[in-house]
Length: 198
Length: 198
Image (cartoon, rainbow over all chains, first blue to last red; front, side, top):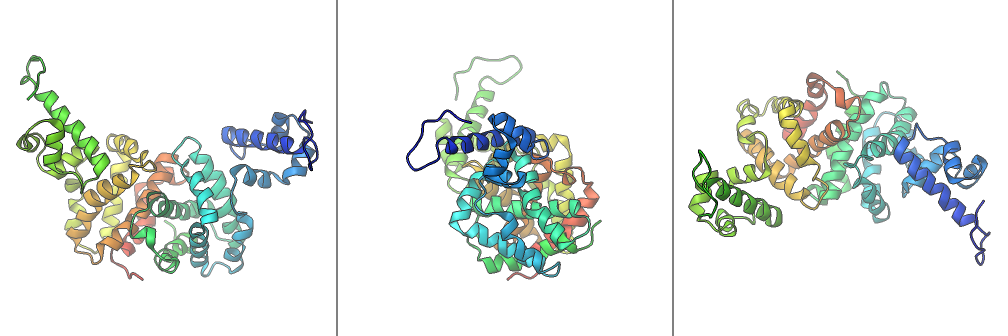
């Protein structure tokens, strides 16, 4: 699988194989998007068997999350938003959003991702990384109607907050408490999730 | 004022002086921001008298708008938003926003500006270009309370729409009609402008 020299305390070659798979995945997801990339194509590009990709990374979603270097697993952290049901989902989503962005350990890597949002890969980042991995599972878990129209509205508010509060640091947004963020934005998110649509 | 050679049909030197003032203004606004830049400092950097800056560009606001190369004068196009008063201001603002961004002649130069929003000059662009030149006059004209807290909320929604709809081209946002945009977003803007704050 690899020609790397043995290293102390590790299975020979394994780290390089894992890195090769991850590099191939990043390259393919970036050029072909999530939908246009398969575990098989990543394996072929890395010169390994597809079973090895599954062995190291699990599912295609797991591989995608690893390729994006997301600091948290969105499937785990969004569970409380889903489990409470549609009522109050806007508030729970906004509280989760504030918690993730106010924690330095998650904010720093997310900021690095967000800085690419206006680059050509920005659409993939929002479409696949944010909508597919974060918001669509929330919408499906909540059972909201018309998620393909509603979730981009949610994204349009959250992306605006990220840009002004965290990238630009615009006051007083940058210093707003989580409670104030929830008070201001939860009704907006709730309306986009469950309110009337034109 | 300048050593440029005479050109046919133009006052000798005038275009170069104007260009020198504009270049100095761009450089100073970019490095010192709107508040840190004076007509006098622009004149000094361009090696001309302050009266000449006023002669070519009018007020400091006029000079700033010229330096940003805004395709429309925000003080003119926002008048109908202000004149209708606070009731329905969210709807009128959203309709103006859709009209400006759906017109190719204004969208193209605005897009060029917005692509710098995540760069170091992004804060100046939003703080001085968008808030000071567009939203603050609207807030003042409408007489809303607490504009320094409310207008950044309005900006956070509009910036998110610009990024997803116009920069990234995320569907179905990218194809939404002006009427649908107004139906979805006007209540949000109205609440940020005149609704309860935490």
